[in-house]
Image 1 (cartoon, rainbow, N blue to C red):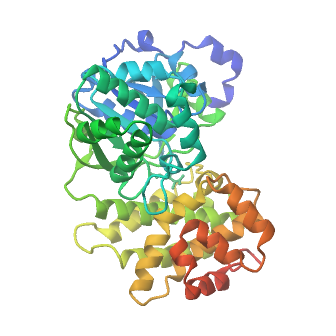
Image 2 (image 1 turned 180 degrees about the vertical axis):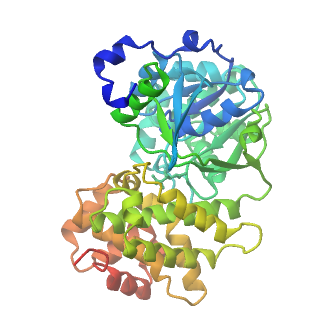
Image 3 (image 1 turned 90 degrees about the vertical axis):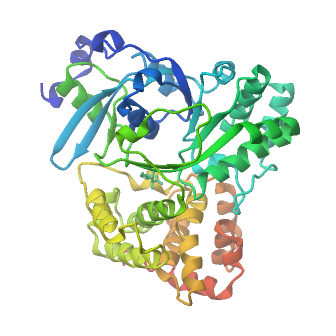
Length: 466
Ligand code: CS2
């Protein structure tokens, strides 16, 4: 049936996707995930489905702030369709590795699962900002969310941050003497295993120092570089799945065909054979991490800010604009000069990125990428800008990413950001010192450097179409 013919009525006549329909048994829970969203489903859940031992590795996946995704997924026994969207067309496959979809507020279930030794792995996609890290990567124990969660952990209610909930679960594991496990950070942060370690141990320490000791001794924080472009699912995607597959799936996920997962660290209680789906286990992750964070995510942020200022809505649209494409090429040249030449195949990686970004069938919205700029720019622009300046060069292309963000904070409706109040205060009060004050929210060291502030000021306003 054509997707145009799918209406609410025809959808109601279709069988609902579930385990009985697909004769798919549920694997026992051995993994817990925090951050049940589209990317988790197209990436970690998809990789787990590809493992030859998938039958032993069920995932209990918890939502963040809202229960909605858990409710819709639970109604179809955790099953969902992955739509791999290539230029040439769509392919559809059902993923069954999520065996429990749980409201994140159900901390009793989280604690119950972490308290059994067969739970071996916790994966995290909680967003960069949720690690509540200071710019140097250390844990910000003074953040208001932390203070509120500490009161909750002390007996005033349930914690609400992912860190607070995880720490509560780890305390239950210690009490049950259920042994060591691995925490696998799947957020786009440099050195993400170490950031996760500092934040989880920091949160535990602020509550109960003896728990922090237990966590340090019993938790392996695995660093990973994750990659798969996964835009938000639209009603048209739901109709396309119904038309092509003949069942009703309220929660399909659309992703590009490409996927990559590089991991480094120990799994003391075991893990699925993710290598069967192409995951790579390495000793030294930093070069892979920097390649992905700078070349892919850096280009994304540059497109998100410069592209929106120039009136574009999606990555593919922005990339078709020669101004944006030149800006990306210049930024990639700066990034590449600071990556090891050996082993990373940068020219091929850049070529592949251009092809991935220009997949016009994936409507990847710039507004989605533009969120949380102060945190993202620290990983994506600042290291390249610093490295270029240390090498005696200007870093103008990396600086343009930050300058475009500054322009967006004035030209666009307020962007979601952990520092949105500070951004608004700067824009209201500080006309003359605006560039320095906004830069200080991204990186205090750079903001103290007059030459960088001058460079940034000279780039402001150069992106927008005249
Ligand atoms: C994007 C990433 O939203 C963003 O900030 O840059 O989510 C990006 O699509 C993924 O990292 C791709 O793997």
